[in-house]
Length: 433
Image 1: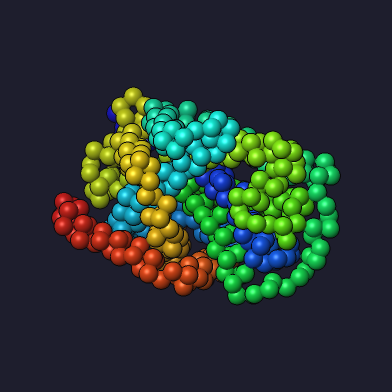
Image 2: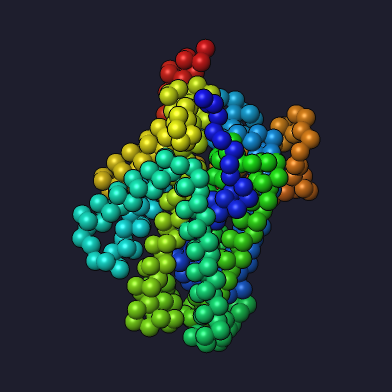
């Protein structure tokens, strides 16, 4: 039996993973806060496009990294190649224990809470539904990579189709008012706060695009497939974000925006009448389910890669004999996510680690500067070094904004990451010596 994962995913699956993972509930919530802050359609679109272009710069840089090292694990592999085992372990430490199970818990609970708008559920029933859906989606990914990929692709196509329908139906159905875009170029009432809030919101909405490289070890012709998937995925996400924000403004004047949740409900009511809230809830359920499939497909590949390199328990680096999936790595993410759902403590935990979660991918892009000294005949980042520099600088800027919003919270996150240092030296580095 081969100890490697089978190369079986093509461009469609890789692109679906990016879109499925990035576009979740945020597209229905983020535009409200951004629009309310900048008070201008023009500046709202500018923020989306600028962060979209910065994300594309990161994606182009990651295309070269994944072409150089087309292995399972993505950022873990890139960090290990650039900086060694220590930093790679810290990345794996934080995504294994906090980020991946925490986000899985958030989307599981998000699925249940929006599902309860369609079928009323008590609080305990919502918790049970969240746990069941995480286990079910994880089991599909555990017992068949192609089955999970097919489900993800179908849900992503459905997600894109629904968003395109909302945009077309909203504009061509005449349910809104073009005067809602006036004044188009108005100046935000408070420049600094508006730009900070808008940039953080937009960056958060794009976060997770880098995780497609976690399945690089299962992608066919990765030197061609991953650059196409990364560029196409980020480009399509940017277009969808701009168009969806535009139709929301067309349906609901910015001045009438109360908060994130009611904004989506207001848009739904404008489109579908009194049933609008339930219709939007159904749309969000589909979107979140696709995101769950993406996270439970990509996340475990990091722990699998860690185990293969002796930086996690060896058993997690062996594929299932029959299904060829990293089943134990998937199982550990399911278990941790379910524990967090049952405890109800995941939301605050995740907020401690957003800055950390985006710094690691930026560190991998920075590593490209010295990894380029190694011979490589495949894909190379265009306009190097400008492209990675743009991504790194904008990421640093966003991290500074996040830190200044709540320094104590972010320092706690950094402290928990640093706890991984003695774990690495006492357990995993020693076992590799």
